[in-house]
Image 1 (tube, one colour):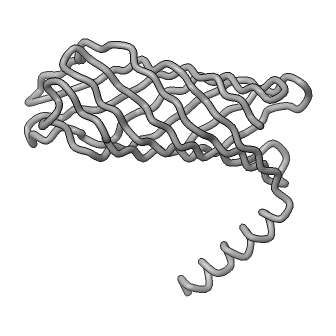
Image 2: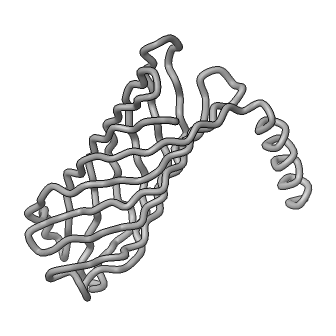
Length: 179
């Protein structure tokens, strides 16, 4: 039963991919990080600093009007007074283009998966390497340019200490260019 369902989904995706429009692009932006923490009924935020992101994106427009996917491959840096965390991150966004034309508003939502490549400062031995969560964003596309605002909610506790709960939440502003 499960194999049959997987087979039908693969056939559907393959038939749709033949009609899909695909574009490749590069993006860069600024991250405003909010590390939220809690421990034994006490909660707060870490003093945060501005980070950055850069990487590649792939846009797949499906034959369903306005719907598509936009997976990305990013290097993103989250900073705070205590240190910084550089993540290799893969957001996988479901994309909805609201209207067509030269100026196209879009909405995106989806999960992200990250792996820390560089932990510095006081966080070198106190943070887990993996991070994952959900993102929600909106923006506009004009010609081959894409301007986006996105908020990502970290859903995994990234602290190595079991009594301490730390989440990586990021508001990002980015600009991308499709080739």
